[in-house]
Image (cartoon, rainbow, N blue to C red; front, top):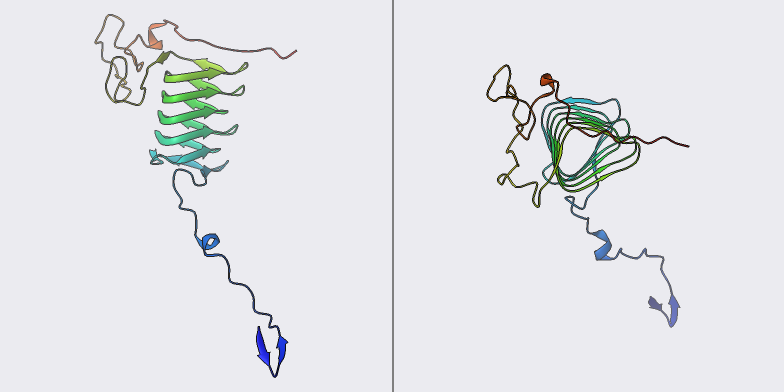
Length: 185
C-alpha cells in the first residue's frame, strides 16, 4: 500500500510463493516409481539401487531393487533380489526378498527365499520356498550368494541340480514344488 496525497491506493502485485512450497522433494527411495512400460523389452541386469520399480514390460536379466512390482503384463526372466516383491505377472527365476506377495494372476517358476510370503488364491508357484530371518544377507545357511546353474556337470548323486538350494534339478524328473490354484465359483 502506498499513500498518495492522503489517499490510500492498492497495487495488484502478485504474492510471492511460500519458500517452503518452492522446495522440490528429493527423488529417491520415497520418490516416484520407475516404470518399464508394457511393450518395452530390456535385456541385461537392472540395478534400481533400492528404489521402487514397476515392471509392465519384459526383462531378460536379473533385477535388483528396493521395492519391485511385476504388473499384470510384466515378465522377468532372471533372478530378483529386492526388499519387497509383489508379482501380478510372470517371473521365471529365483526370488529373494524380505516380503514376497504373489497376487491371484501371478505365475512364478523358480525358488523363493523370503522372510514373509503370501500367496493369493489363483496364483501359480512352481518351485521351492525357504524362510530365512534375513533373506538378503549374502551369508548364512541356505542362502546362496547367487543362483548356480551347472551345465552338464554331475556333481552329486542327483546329477548336479540347478536349484538355488542345491537340490535335484527338474531334469532328474523329481518334482518338488507347490501349485496353488483356485476355482472361481
